[in-house]
Image (tube, rainbow, N blue to C red; front, side, top):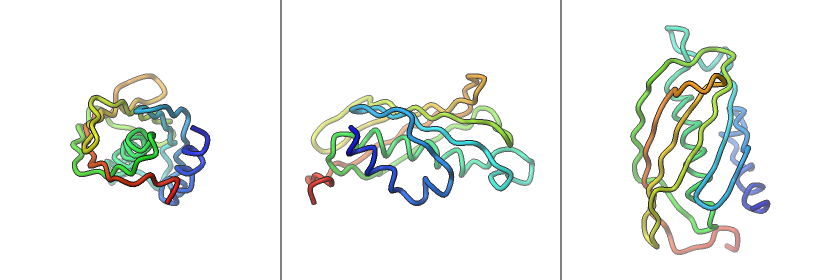
Length: 134
């Protein structure tokens, strides 16, 4: 898992957002991000795109955790509660289904008070290549 975590930590977009990988296992990932001043919308709430990006990084880590390239083909997200500047958000991605061709994942996003901020579901297409050995 350390090789995978090191590989995932090269994601420049996730770095730019300040996303950290806290836990990684087969079909599972837990990532965190602090909501900063430049991540809010005109209502002063955490921008939905920032929350989506956090969920997407968890999704990418969980779905690629086997070393086989998995690319997202669909994600649906439900925003349940607003996040705010200073919130530390945690996204947990868990695998619901895996085959040689597709995978289904559920992402839950919480704030530091363990309030559910958003729910997301995603599907990946699995390519035949092992990205660590290409």
